[in-house]
Image 1 (tube, rainbow, N blue to C red):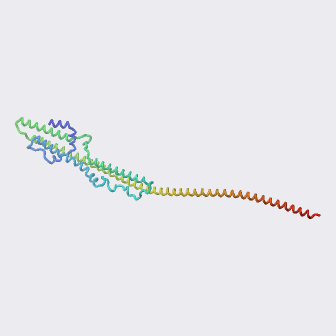
Image 2 (cartoon, rainbow, N blue to C red; image 1 turned 180 degrees about the horizontal axis):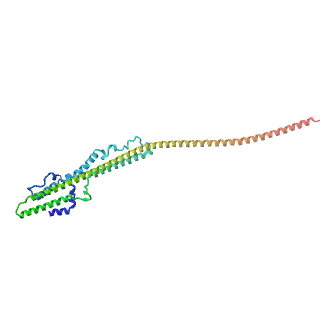
Length: 322
């Protein structure tokens, strides 16, 4: 008994870890027997406690069963098909280098979707891990395993004392031993019921918490899928807008080319007009010089005719006088 107390005090963490277990076989299998000694009874209790991990895993298995069924039923690591964004479903493809940004946008959305899938897988793995929790009720930690060990030690001491007294008086062990064993069995059954109720309550609470976490993950993934669909729709609108802008730019370029050609033709017409003006100015100066020369020549001819007429008149007048 002293060795058991020393082990219980030396390893409180190991003793405290047994408070999350349920001794399932001890409730249905009788622990007490009239034909066995205390050591045998203690060993039978220890043997029944070996079945505890089987029942303690029920809570974690039930917690992760629904999540595993939902994850295994979905492709691509747990993401439903209805949530897969149709990033490449748009029939509008890049028709020119100016629309290359759409491909980059779609690749970015694919990367974000894969990141969301990875986060969902990690969260599912963490939920399936079923971490061990400290049992606390009303702010006071109940070491049910230590209470059970103390009850066993007290019962063993009572049995040893009663057996020593019986041997000292020279009589066999009486019904007091059975009474002590009955009280021990009653205490053990009480501890088992308390542990079972506590673990059932904790399992129910954590099932509810895991359901809330799964619902939060599902709503988050739905929101991410909706946002991705909206981004895909907006990208399609951006592509159509880019096509319209590309047409406007092409039209502006063609108009610019036409304007440059018109400017060249206008410059050519202006050059022709300048040449014509120069030619007209030259013709006017030449006509002026020609008219002046003709006027001088006419004046000279008129003056010569006048002189000739004067001479003829003088000659005629001179001949006509006696």
